[in-house]
Length: 299
Image 1 (cartoon, rainbow, N blue to C red):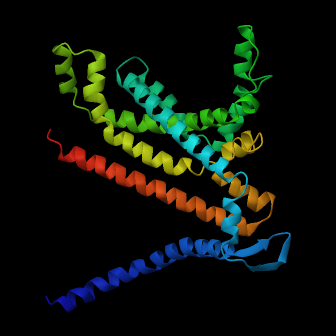
Image 2: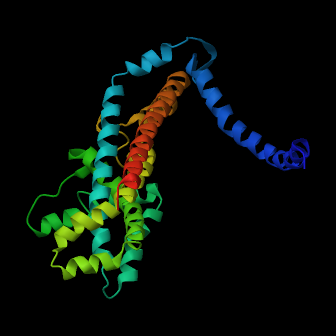
Image 3: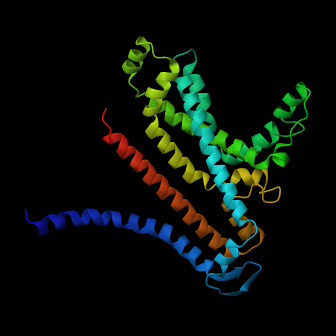
């Protein structure tokens, strides 16, 4: 069969997928193009007829906004803290529940279930049922021991948001790590135990190396999603007190829906997209190098 006849046979099959590809490109490119367009315009929803081309002024305004660098710092602290909490506690909890005990399946199900709770519902539960300084569960415990209840979202706002978000993403890490531990070589672990290896040595030299790739995957996935945390901040602190819990997405929200400045919000949205892509590319390369080094290492 000639090359032209093979191309003639393949071409109709490719054409069947073209509408879906075009629709997907339009769905992605049109909003992005509109965001780029409005980022170069002065467009305020209160004065829609006074729009004009301003070039890069919206970016300059966003970068010099008083809360910008605070929001960047809060974003870094939020992402880094949640990653540290979910990875460390995720590994430890996964190792514990990997051992056989009565009710193991129920415990695993309960540990994973918080991941399926909507962020808004989770934030409301933590705000009103757990961290409320008057009627919250933590306040009840503090009064039971004779201590003064802590007003979490006023005294420790960023820490409170970090705890809420970490509680939401910890089940995801546990799910990945528990699944990875199922493929661990049990015979190797039993042999180490028979040779007298202690639990810490097994954890350090067998379990942690085995969880290297799952940890890298968890860090990459969580980092991308944590850069867009919004609902938890909106429900609990509304970015405050002041700008103590304002991250980059929430700052974009304040520009768009509180100050009605679509141009500055569009510029901020592009900045957030660039930051997210930088983090994603960095993590992908870091994970790729790690996986390459591990795959090339002698077994």
